[in-house]
Amino acid sequence: PRGVAMTTDIQNYLNFCLHLMLAFGISFEMPVVIVLLVFTSLIQEATLRRNRRYVFLICFIIAAFLTPPDALSMTLLGLPMYGLYELGLVLVRWLLPGPVA
Image 1 (spheres, helix red, strand yellow):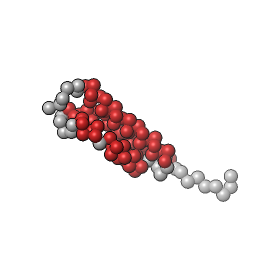
Image 2 (cartoon, one colour):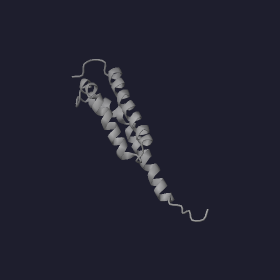
Image 3 (cartoon, helix red, strand yellow):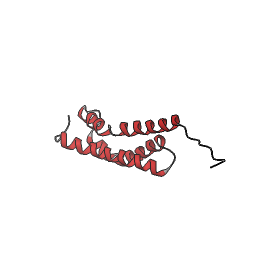
Image 4 (cartoon, helix red, strand yellow):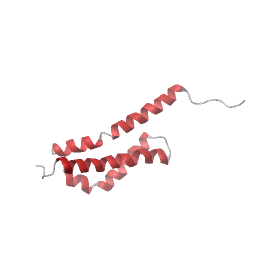
């Protein structure tokens, strides 16, 4: 239609897509990082379990910075990030069943 200008160009679109793919890719490394932190005794499993509510908040704060300014995008990144945190705790329990020295 006349009077309508296209404001999105391919550079902005690709930048947006790559940014989101990078954010999701990094967030999917969370279980590996958690297992490595506990395995190397840098943090204890009990500490990770005790601080779940703070991790939930931090996941959504990170998601707010990495996604466009709408609640749906933030939720679509924040919930999987927290789910991956919980998956990391399950993997720690499964891979390291005894007390970690």
